[in-house]
Structures are given as structure tokens and as C-alpha cells.
Image (cartoon, rainbow, N blue to C red; front, side, top):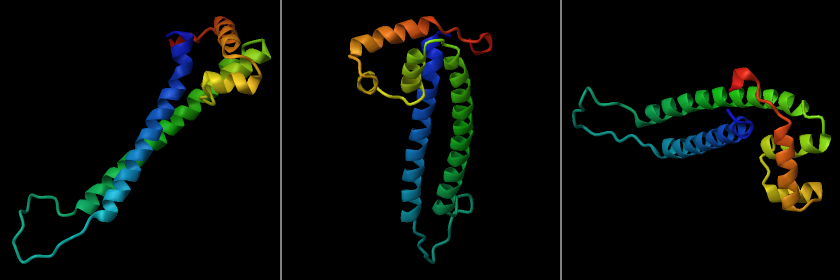
Length: 138
């Protein structure tokens, strides 16, 4: 695994977590719209009896997935902090933290650090060259 791919894992995991949170919001909205209609007609015994219960079960499952993903993200970020701290240059460390832990754009990083974007790219390339991904992560 390349250094960029390794460091980019946190961003992708964060995106998946946000996607699942949006799914939960959608399911919660759906669950509040669920209504039960009483009729005198017989029902199919094999059919699910409650749309609300199904929605709640899906929400609970999705929340458990999100909790697992959040735990993975926290562990991954902890590993990434350790890796970034191995870089000797504090300016490089700051750039890597802003990009891979705070998920800032190149433009935001340039403004925060007081550089133009091209210089930020050069610093990033220098920083990446000074990192070696641990063998267990490759």
C-alpha cells in the first residue's frame, strides 16, 4: 500500500460513516411516517406485521455498523498520528495532519499555512517521501 493510499483510508472511512448517518436520518424519517391501518380483512400470516418494527430494526443495525466504523476510524487516526509524528519536519507534520486527519482541501491548507497551493504540493511530496508505511499495514 502506498503512503498516500494508507493516509487516505481515514477520509474514505469518514465518508462511509457520513453516508450511513444520512441513511439513518432517512430511515428515521420513514419510520415516523409509518402508520398502521386497521381493517377487517384477514392478513397473510407470512407477511411482516410491522413496517415500523422493520425500520427500527434496520436503524439499530445501521447504528451498530456506524459504531464499529467509528471505532475503526479512531484506531486508524491514532495509527496515522503515530506515523505522522515520525516525520522530523514539523511543517510537514502540520501539512499531513491538516490533509489526512482534518480532511482539509489543498486550498484550505495553503491559506492556513500562509503558502500558495503549488508550494503546499511541493511540501506534501517532500513529506510523503519521508514516511514509510508499517509492514503490517501494507
